[in-house]
Image (cartoon, rainbow, N blue to C red; front, side):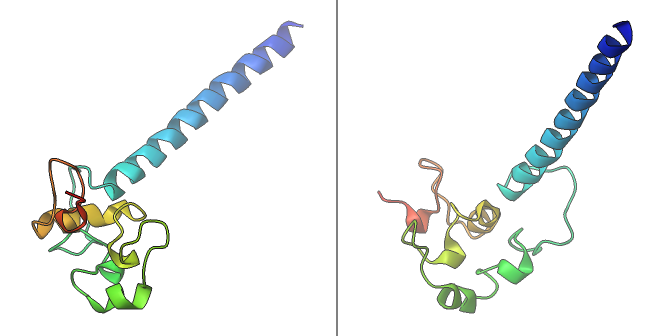
Amino acid sequence: MESIVNKKLILSITAVILVGTGSFFIYSTYFRSAGGETTTQDSTLCAEHGVDPALCPFCDPKLIEAKGVCQEHGVPEALCYQCNPGLIPGFKATDDWCKGHDVPESQCPL
């Protein structure tokens, strides 16, 4: 009986460690893509806008027309910060950010 309790305890501790580690990696990945401050410079991002260069509509405006309109939010898909929060640093870098409403100024409803 004691052996079964020990095995369950070990499995529970292992599960907590794995869930905690997974949560940390998911949180840190989301935080970086959402434009959160990081302590290291990610060399895979566009230096000027902080966006993945292959998806940067600020560097490649052709992406705006090529991707069409976001059906859910009614803005160009390439500029939809709600579907792609990784674009937020680019909006901020181009001074297109409404601090009062926490949206791109160009998409601010007011």
